[in-house]
Length: 318
Image 1 (cartoon, rainbow, N blue to C red):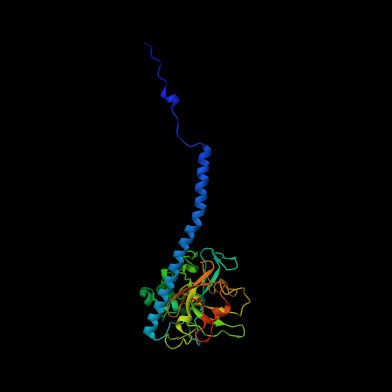
Image 2: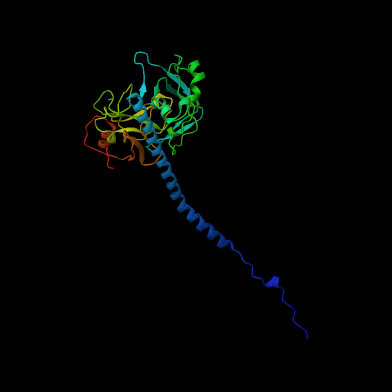
């Protein structure tokens, strides 16, 4: 009996797979899901960085408390012999820098821009032992400057490398600053609270907790209460070894739209309060509790919590 030939299975097999249209549809769905998830992931990451920033401010406040326990005063904002002040040192930016301002504009500092650094020291240097950075404590007897806007030879040998050392607790995790600043100096994003400068005053008032040659003691010299008075907060730009970067204040002597993310004056180094956290700025109060303060907070409240002895009724809501 003759049997029919068996069909070639290769010719009738069904080939499984995607058509080009199906592949494009799948890719479009994946892209859509990624576009939905990516902002959420970024928000979660920024939330973590913001929390880490608050934790760093808390740790810095604890360090100032330890300093207060030793010396019976908070560290001065910066220290200067008014009869013989130390001069500035002219440094230069080794690479371009962009600093984002609150107006939506960007401040571009070109490589080679002259950047004056104060010959004086600020609170960042004074609390180095309290943040376990004893090896970075400078020799206070060696001046930074040599009297002609340059680093002194002795300081160049013994101190310059110290202020070129990055200190993690001084840098906000959300900061977009480069690795090194002018003359390879190390950055900080945190400043001490000078207080509030009203428009009616010709000179600033020393009504904060850190200012020139200040000696504010926690339990004695903050009558408004440590839980109602700011101690430290965020800034866009600064150098921890530079007294010009020690502090910031809320001020009405400039006609500006808000108190935050501003560059004061004409130099490249005058910055007030500001942050890389969008609409909020992180602060820590004199009792070491932290707060994320909205940039649109009422001015009267900001002025109130900036002063240690104003007796104002306004308080930031908890």
